[in-house]
Image 1 (cartoon, rainbow, N blue to C red):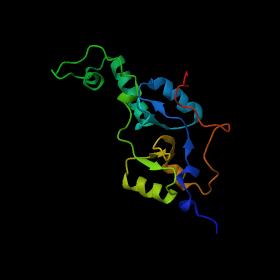
Image 2: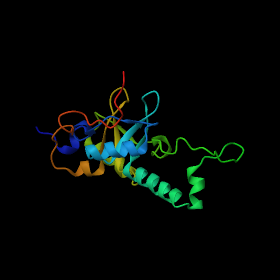
Image 3: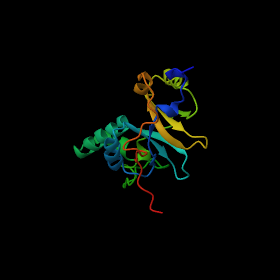
Image 4: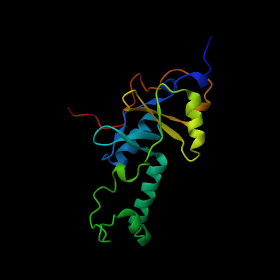
Length: 174
């Protein structure tokens, strides 16, 4: 008996891609996202654990802040510069353009062996969330599914570009 789409695992409909690192620059990530036709990427911390998700909405917010700063809008200062424990703003904001400052966290995740039905239920329980990060058995992020993926009539298998996993993160130099 053939499975319905709702009974298939989310691994069958996910977009495979490598996560971005929390210290990656947003502008570089945006170019890579556009290059593989994606709207979000999982974010990993120093230990490789998923700590968030960077979406196009997060990037748009970053770009709007940057534009307001360039236009010398004084109301943007509180949003751009962190305040220390004494209430003083840091004069240098070295990490403003890093993913960790603009990502959405905590992230809603789903295991690769869970069903498409479970993914739909999870998205329904978080009405403001449009993406789920897919984790493998070791809880490492391996892809993303979005609400639009749940409405597709067929399951072609994991979505890949040019037969290989979409590369979003910077290449390892080891």
